[in-house]
Length: 240
Image (cartoon, rainbow, N blue to C red; front, side, top):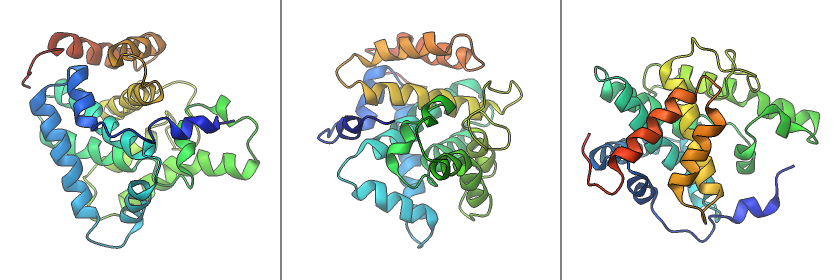
């Protein structure tokens, strides 16, 4: 079961996620691009009354800001990874992955369910809740596929973001054939979650812990690459 105090970890935090990203060692120009993309997408989505705008209103108005911090920090980390790993389609990749980071968990009815990161954590929950959680990636991808403002390809990243090809439940092993942007998002979520769950520990230590955790998986090289970027740029005003 989810510990109740988890929901209050960042309740009183006002640290902008772009500042957390810069402290980690993300390049300043990349943080600016990721941040601009995040708020551009938000502005575009909020124009109409739809599933995505409703979701953003809910998590922005909630007194506990963990969920909102989570999608923002995930967006910045994932954008840095995507930017570094493909020099030919950078803007399109950043658009896709930021949208996916923002809305991949938008069909979870309760914000605290974002803390469920594996099938083992479903134990003790009712069958109805388990089914709802297991279906959320597929449902979010279907909504994205039919949303006129969604970047092409974002639906696929969302469908696969828990490691299952069909978007149903949590994959036991990340498929090596998944799009690299999906792996960027999955890695970014792991890192962002670790940082936000442990605000009293140095963020770089938590990145190193995540590298160790993912080292024997298909996400290992992505986590290592991100840590390498942070080490190279930590303490600098970096550029892309």
